Amino acid sequence: MFRRRGSSTGDMTGGNIISQLVYFAVPLLLGNLFQQLYNAVDAIVVGNFVSKEALAAVGSTAPLINMIIAFAMGMFAGAGVMASRYFGARDRKSLLKAIHTTIALSAVMGVVLSVIGIVWLRPLLRFMGTPEEIMPDAYTYLVIYFGGLIALSIYNAGASILNALGNSRQPLFFLIVSCILNIFGDLMFVNVFHWGVAGVAVSTVIAEAVAMVLALMALHKGKGERLLNFKDLRVDFPILKQIVGIGLPSGIQGTIVSFSNTLVQSYFNGLGAISLAGYSAAQKIDAFAQLPVQTMAIAVATFVSQNLGAGQAKRARLGVRQSMLLGVPVTVLISTITLIFGRGLLRAFSPDDEVLEAGMRYIWVFAPFQFVLSGTQIIPGALRGAGSTRFPTFVCIFSFVALRQIYLFFITRINYSITTVAMGYPLTWMIAASAIFIFYLRSDWSKFERNETA
Image (cartoon, rainbow, N blue to C red):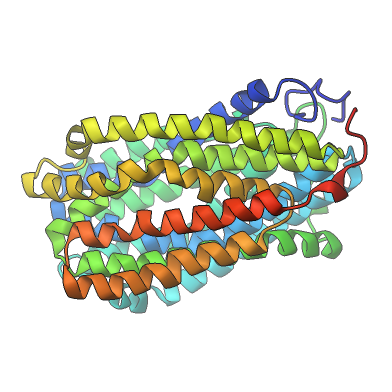
């Protein structure tokens, strides 16, 4: 497993930085693309084969899905940082302990989040002001989806470990397989069995279960060395403490920000089913547009963590700069494409002209500011790789929750529309990006330095 520095495809502690980041990030980007397709395909199928109300119902579930998953994903980010650091330091014993602790934690977390989600589902939907005409479908979709959270939790834990070791290709393959299964399942359950919204939810859970099995098999069999023995699954509490120390702030941030988005969702709900359907479709496009910076954030977190583990702080800093040079131009290009072809992209979700018009109003707000997300994704990713998560967490919570809600409270009393509500996103992106970038410039990684010439 531990070869000469820079000789392994998963080892980013030596060699050309740009090529390593691209080599690692491209499969990761494609994997994230297929992961986004899960909910997007569900929305496309119900929007075209069921009704625009069904599209609004599935779209309205996104903030709750993101909220209940965000906490677990933050914890797995902490696990990825620890695995990358042990890998970079060539500490095989600690790496295996981290892997087994992460998988055990993911199983428990999946069950707990599933129970919490189902128990609090109806009150949360009502709190969001979900329109009554879409409430039954939204509830049905989420009950089934939350019922399968253990599969999603374990898969993402396994994928986080593989990514931390520089292996972004296997998770990509698993997602391609599961996404194809989800597409065929959606079409079969909706068009053949006529299960409607319940059908796309069942299909998604089945596909995620397949991805979970593939990820566990990859860790259990390994390439040259077995990384996971099921009989050894247990929690190593010193390592768990480190995982929680890094992952908990990110998990809390993700949960609180996602909860804030449920409050934003309530403002869109108040505009009616047509506006909600348009917003839901545009939000799916927004999610795809954000993938490059989100992917680069994961790549740079792995790169920074491995290099700091190897005592190469200067190389870690250089990787952050080059990540930004890659991420910003790509995001600008995608934003331009979104603005030009937005209506055609929206048409994939719904043929309704009113829905298309509502969706385009949202796109014209978020697309021009998409590049700002480099500061709220890539830089925090680098800081997470260094184990510095508290300040970025505070800034994101303050900007995306407190400031965003203050803005929405006042603006909707002056001018209540899709445009004014949507502006809450880019305004708070810019505030958070500025603060986090200044913090990064002042951060000190010299404590990690051991051998800068290695």
